[in-house]
Image (cartoon, rainbow over all chains, first blue to last red; front, side):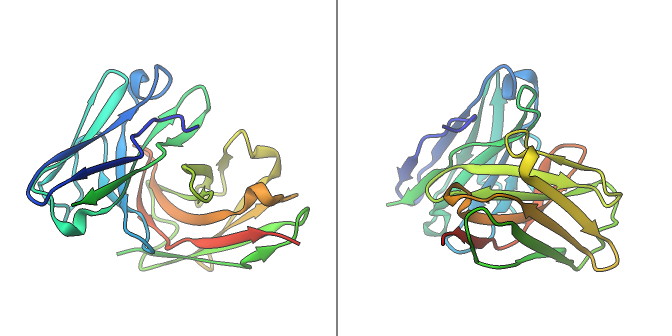
Length: 111
Length: 120
């Protein structure tokens, strides 16, 4: 059971958009801690996708955007491309656990 | 572009100590503003933060693992290491090393990960 809850899977057709949710609680996202997002292609190292809720590292397309509200955060991907098919996971900090916490991960399938 | 690479045994016997090293290249482990972390993922499960260390040697670990975890740094070799004592099958996982940004607690560089299996 992950501290941050993500849907196990989402899917969308090429060109469409999807949103991946990340639900936390009052000791992590709701406490104001930042949410970060990562993507992992099979057999590769995880890669930072969004940091501090809404920021994209250099090289990440504008199709990827992050938002945060209350005890939840979301990752939105527009204009889906075949290469977007991967695992996405969120991360924050939890004050009651005194450490970094992750979501369970969401597998994106581009139909 | 900093790169991280995990190394160590892929098979550890129950009750023994798991030891992994992360070698940092393309940048100095002494760089300010970062910490050096270990994260693992059990098969089919979520990522789990194990702990991190600053180049100064100050280390912090997940309270659920704290009694079994030791993280150290060797700045002369640009490496940091993980030791996990008294392992069981529940410690079988892919272990990642990663660089964390200390001001905002996110990880901007990761190693490829190494599978460690605990089995007799």
